[in-house]
Image 1: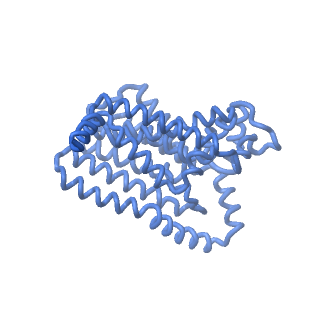
Image 2: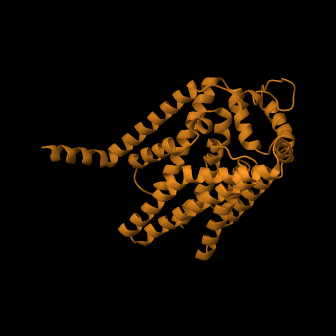
Image 3: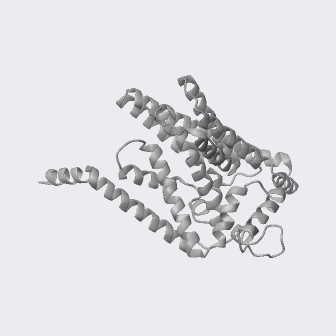
Length: 339
């Protein structure tokens, strides 16, 4: 009797129609949860600074023109993250209800893009969706600071989302050589999105260039390196350069050096990096290695090999993003988000 009930339940939840229903319900549930968490999370710290025009004396941001002026000042006096801080100031310009809705929606899209990469070209599978959500929920070391805090979410959630959206066509072309966005419009779009993605977050931008470059090498070896892939690589490089050469970065670095002796900063960074790696990254690497050998042993077809190989590329890219933090004067745990 019990076996029959379990069999019925199993057939029910694995049925494609019910999978789609559970999938939709799961998305709605995740959105509602994230919206409520956003509503209960207060504005604080940099949220107040970015509610005003940067570099002006208590001038409240009241429109897009104010945000553009603010980011111009910010670029030359504090940092190069124009894209993410533009998003932050745009959200803070809205009524709190709306910026909570939009921030929760950004998280849902973030989960969905990861799902599309993980479950590429397969039937709807709400188990994978829930698994991704749980991994983000339990393994992000600074959940509130990167997903609920408006300034933090703009820098990390939104920044990583933009990068994943940019990476997705490259991943799609790797998995499916028939995926062919062609023509001038496709090249222009991927070029512009590349600039935006590269202009988000320093260590993640460097890692994005590494990832896209690897994809281009793979395409070249296949004998198919499409024009849009090259334009996207150029775009992300331009965005990264605009981010890194911002005069405000060096003003901020000089302020940090005045607060600490340079040798102390170097020692602090290396010891902290080791601590972050062991505590937050190593458990995931161990899990990845175990699953790597399990999947490799269970299946040995060519498609599975492609998936295993690209998973290794993503893990390698995460390490590039991690070690790029050596160049930063500080390494807060929220910077582990994209990694």
